[in-house]
Image 1 (tube, rainbow, N blue to C red):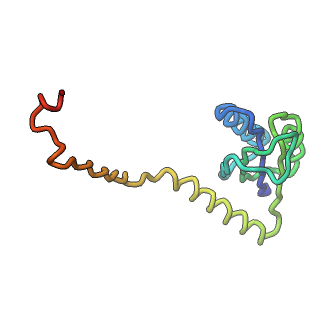
Image 2: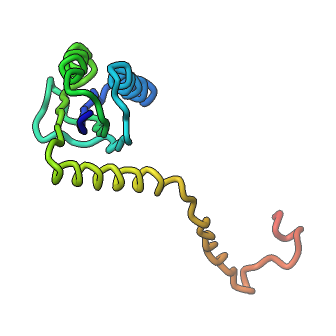
Image 3: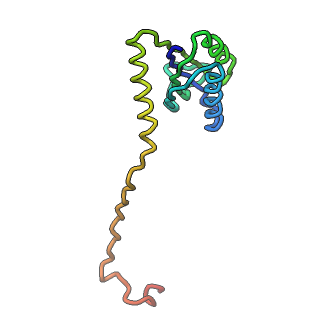
Length: 147
């Protein structure tokens, strides 16, 4: 099995649930063809370098996985059929140096995925000091305040 990386750009006109459903479908395509997903890196909505099909933005998602080389043609064919994808690119990591870089990218993506899970201590909001009313203007009793 070889190591691969796929960057997919999903249409920005979809709702968040539809985007996640498309990402899940992409991951299912990879696993149904015998792939093992190491990790994913959701990069979020970003501005495109140039408009693609009149879209100025796109949802970027990177998937790191291992699969047999013969399955790549089927995976890419299924990506081309999916009309919700603006673009995709498949990168193959072949040499030992490239595999070491792939392992580094996977560990980096896993750390990034774990980072938001950590909760930070809530920051106490500083209350603005109440404006003090000068004694000459302050009402002496509640009855005077009602007038």
